[in-house]
Length: 164
Image (cartoon, rainbow, N blue to C red):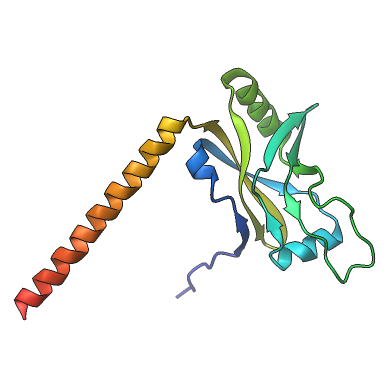
C-alpha cells in the first residue's frame, strides 16, 4: 500500500491582515527572485508581508515592501531589506492579472511566503479592499461563529454530564 502523500510546503510567513482588510477574488502561485542571503534568511523565518503589495509593470510582476531581513553570517549585505523583488509567472497569467487590476480596480496582495520543493514561492491574490462597514460585518460574523461554537461545546458538556 502506498504511503499517503505528504505536503512538501514549508510556510515561512502569512499576511494575517489580508483576509480582514480585503475580499479575496482569486489566488495564484508565483516564484520569487532572491539572492542567496535572502533565501537563507527566509529559511530562518525572518520575513514580513505587512504592507506589501504587487504591481504589474511593463509586462513583469513585482512585489514591493516585503521585508526580508539580512542574513547575519553573510559576507555582504543586500542593503535594503524592503527592496522590490521580481515575481515569476507565465506571461499569460501576468497579462490576465494586469487586465483585472486595470479594469476592475483590484489589488495584488501577497497572502503567504513558503518553500515548495526547495523553491521560494509567494501566494498572491487579486483582492478588493473592504470598507469600514465590511470590516465591522466580518467582526460580527466571527463573533456569531464563536458564540455558536461556545453554545455547542456547552451543550455537549451538559449532555455528557446528564448521560453519566
